[in-house]
Length: 359
Ligand code: OGA
Ligand code: NI
Image 1 (cartoon, rainbow, N blue to C red):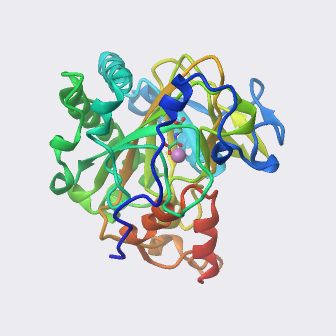
Image 2 (cartoon, rainbow, N blue to C red):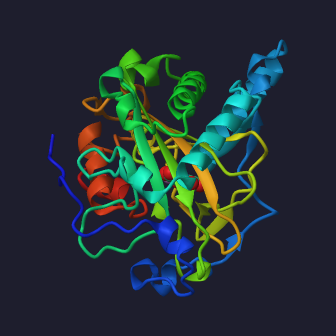
Image 3 (cartoon, rainbow, N blue to C red):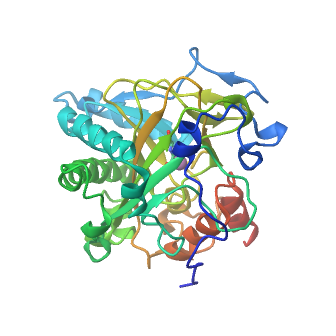
């Protein structure tokens, strides 16, 4: 595997503490160029939104309801790359307690959080930037990143010891969300006309990867000039996001416009990552998204990334390659693929496009 830098190229500034310091003007490093600012192109909200799917329908006694629900998921993966799920089986109290634990974590004194300060070699821990190039534009957020699976990568000593419930909550939350991810993987497989286990096997079977990134978006005195997270597609397999119900912020690209997702209470926002776009030979879309911030409220979101094991070679499924539809992407080892974002930071869909140009 290619190696990554062992340390950040410049001192790390915690955005939360910049925000708490009461500044009225944000530092230059966070100011986006005009065309990247939130108001540059129209954003849509209200009238159109990503599909909301009731997963109860997948287990209905009525075959037509099962078919319709699977069909809605299929359509969402192909056209939107994003959907929300309700009645997903993850217990509401587990979701609520996990969010509470993370809110408490970010409220801790800076010195306590600094014990978990991360480095670009693994990204595990408390972080405030993506990408190691000196001088790159920075986003208005801090985060906590940890590995849950495979077990060989799980190190609970790197998870927050405070609040006291945090480690236990993270374990419980991840177990339930990973189980939901596994169920979705089967449906996503069948919807491509593949064996139910195909995608899971391609991710490494029982040895797949799962990691968590908790995003903390502090209040921002000049929200029109910056972004909480710049446009990117998720490099992994599938993302299950528990957004902040009190504050919206996630925007999904739809053509030239950005759609602000209106979170449904207790729902997960599911999106296709680059590896599922590749495995499905472009039938499923890994769609660009970004996060906007505001001056009134902080926002906490919990993303669970359901990924291939690091050493898996990911390529379009043979069954989805035909004379009319040649393989759109070359085989790539997942660990190598994800280094791109880890070194350069979020850059839209440029990595997927560069894969295509290798063909
Ligand atoms: C991510 C992401 C969106 C959000 O963590 O990759 O896109 O709403 N998060 O925080
Ligand atoms: Ni993302």
